[in-house]
Image 1 (cartoon, rainbow, N blue to C red):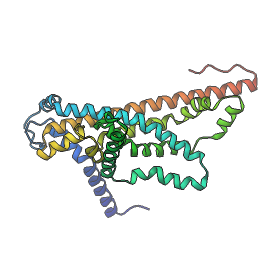
Image 2: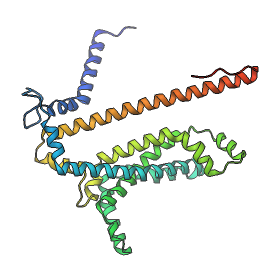
Image 3: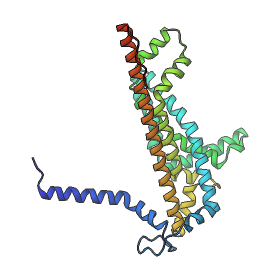
Length: 295
């Protein structure tokens, strides 16, 4: 059954509007980052310049905020991924009757507004460090990492749990029957199976930390991150230097996605070759003929 012309036109208009809404702001920033006017401008193009990129790298506050955001993001990954992995494993091990209550508790930080998490993090650690004499922990970076990790670890847990639910427990049982210890099973069987989920959780944790604003604003204290610096600059008026930063971030994201896809395809191809080699070896043993070499 063919769609009538009106439906085709309506669908085409919807697709065009959708992509304009999705990619329009990126296109505006991409063009304005290379245009010469002082204010972000797409048209008319008065000239092509790279001065806004030079101005961006010369901005000390922006560069300090960028380095701080990267450092905090790496620390959040180092905390959130192991916590998410532990939470996912516990989820599959506990009794079914308490699983719902456990799930509600570990996911609740995701449902909590970031402002509440930031304020409560500052209040709690101010009292805790004051009572225990560990005032050196009352630091903007430490508080931001703890505040962000409290809910980003729940995201990591959900990603790892989705992968873990497809794990065949018979592999663990077979390894244990053959004399492997639980740490050996975890390191040699479970972790390799969870590697794609762990990588995805790490990327999500870093990006979630990098772009977080609500929790960071209240927990960073006197330090600065890229989001807090950008928020202050936008209030004063946007400049093409911010567009240049957006171009760099988008380009880095695209390159990272391409690199990950290439790595994933190569890993899948290598796994397929190993599987074919194993099947060929098994068939050769059954037939009594030598297995062909796999290139």
